[in-house]
Image 1 (cartoon, rainbow, N blue to C red):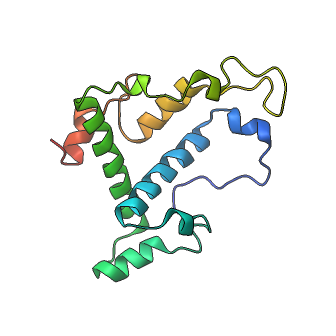
Image 2 (cartoon, helix red, strand yellow; image 1 turned 30 degrees about the vertical axis):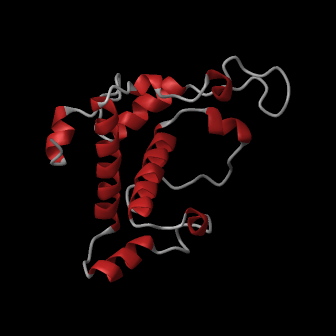
Length: 153
């Protein structure tokens, strides 16, 4: 898809724990894609065979008779995610309180095993992820500008 970073040739186990702009952009794109697939009633197990083998955008165009671009579909997925986030915030869920357990993030890092010494900087990841959606990077709350742009009141 246009605008998304290309996956690197080598992907070491240690690199999955580093935070960088490309990885944050890919995680946000995956979230948008999954929101769209869920909204379309797609089967998660079917999606495991890969996005290139499941032409979701083409199938949605065939079903609706529209000629929506993949970028427009991804914007729809982002709108769904923003609506979900706004709903949670409205009902008292603080985004910063909604992270995985510290143990799952490697805090403290394990002393032995395949993930020894590794941890995930979830705060840096979350901030970048939130900014990909136009939300406040410090709080995770959708900004007024983003809500207005998407027509969410």
